[in-house]
Image (cartoon, rainbow over all chains, first blue to last red; front, side):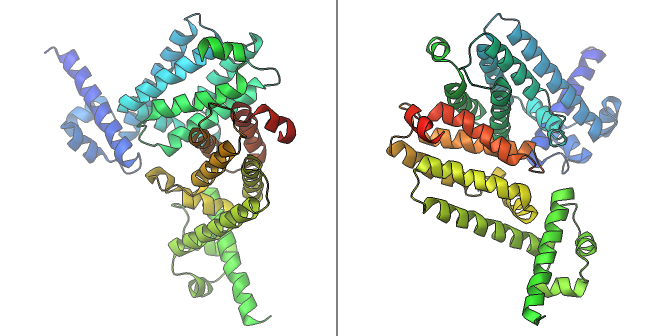
Length: 194
Length: 194
């Protein structure tokens, strides 16, 4: 196996093992030695790729942010109406978060900043899509799109907070949309898309 | 001042100081000495009332649970329809959480169990009120009251997770109700109560 390819696999193995540890016991409780044990990788090989646990966490956050941005570009590039775009985007995110532990760990690590009002991009994305929906007449009259986006974001964050391991995340996201769309979308949109 | 009354005040001072510390730096980072410094109470007086930081936390949780149960009894005893009861109950809770740091600390300490599916009672309370609302015909046809309660609970938890210091909590709770009621309540209920 060419050396470069082997290095890539080692890096990915470290990220996956660290993500599993973060997911199982949390970031604080995870140590370098538990990551090494889980990955079966030597300390030397680890330090070839990462300088510390923090560096692994940063790589997971970057990987998650890239996946999030790629989903955003793909869904907004499809030519769907903005409300359907928002539904499709969060649905895909929920499905992927359920199955991909590295993505889930990246989101959780990124969300450690939510409390300090940095957010992790989702509130802004939902806000933009719901504003566009309002402009295009998909929301009921009297619905404030910014408020709807904030409530939607709260419900999705809450869904994630309650079900920390993300099992059943797609079903919970569907339920959030059923209730929120019933409250904000126009009847004719619901008839066609709901 | 009679000794019993003084003891009561000391106990309350310790609870308030610990709650402020938990609120400011979190439970883990709070130490006995920071609580003593904030309260101006001696170590001896502290140990007369509590055996440890854990014991203070337990007292805050119990105090919060008593307040929550008292609100539940009062609101469900008013003879309002169940949907108005749910709105009024969560509104009062939000207002009190914003202003009362001991209540807020109690909720946060109780919620450290949410992740392990214990919950802290709110999901069950909302579930019961929304089921009663469905029975009494206040929900639109096709709305699943259990699902609506779960989404509502998620949105309230998310609201709390995002705005950790609970400032603006009442406004955020109003926004959640506006969106969710628009999605689940019958038009005639909204016209009368909304």
